[in-house]
Structures are given as structure tokens and as C-alpha cells.
Image (cartoon, rainbow, N blue to C red):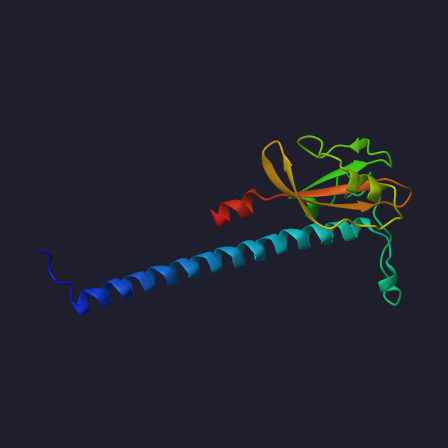
Length: 166
């Protein structure tokens, strides 16, 4: 003979189930919004770096903006280095045909069809940020065309973002 399940036990089980579902929903929502915010920050850092290579834009006609940086001499005068703000960002220069002129530190980044169309486009043309897998490591990448042809690819690892989310 089975013991009778009381109303108290049924309510307790329902409350535990409700709490578990609510906790799972809050966890999922927090995970998703945190991931979105972290990617937005990475994208913003890449777009800020790309703006340093872009020339003046039509939107900035009333506000003077310095001309685009020369990607070969964008350092602080110490030779062929990039500015210190680029320490977390890999920088690679490609020519109009997609050939790597200057590889990113740690090895060349892949050059795709979208990068080729940016490299052949007018100065200041920029791709949207996108995900890229380089030897099993996740990166966010943006490509911006340079005055005189070619482009610069800017990439930032998503390891830190993934570690935070893990």
C-alpha cells in the first residue's frame, strides 16, 4: 500500500521546482547579457583602433580629425612599432591582392574575400566586426582600408571573454 502524498509535500515539491526554473532562467539571462556586453567592449576597442587608421570621414566635416596613420610608421618613433594602445590587438597589413605585407605578432591572420574587397576599396572603408578562428583560438576581427590601397586587419582574442563566461 502506497503512502498518501499530502498537500504540504505537493506544495513543497512545486516550490522547489519553481525555484529551480527561476534560478536557471536568471542564470541563462545573466550569461547571455554578460556575453553580449563583453563582445560589445571588444568590438568597441577594435573600432576605436580602426578609426586611428581611417582618414577623415564625411560625418566629421565640421570637426577636424587627424589624417589616417601610416601602418608602417605608426609607433612612438621607436622604429616600426604600433602605438601602445594596440598591445591587446593584433595588427596585420595586407596589400590590394590580399598578400600579407606585415603579419600580426604570433603569425599571419587569414585573409578572406571580405578583407580583399575592403583592401581594394576607398580609404576608410571598414568591415563589421566578425568572429575568426585562428589555430583553435577565437578572435574578433575588423578590417579597414588604407589610403593608397591595401588594408589593415585588427584582431583581438576572445580568450579573456570566454574565461569570464566560463
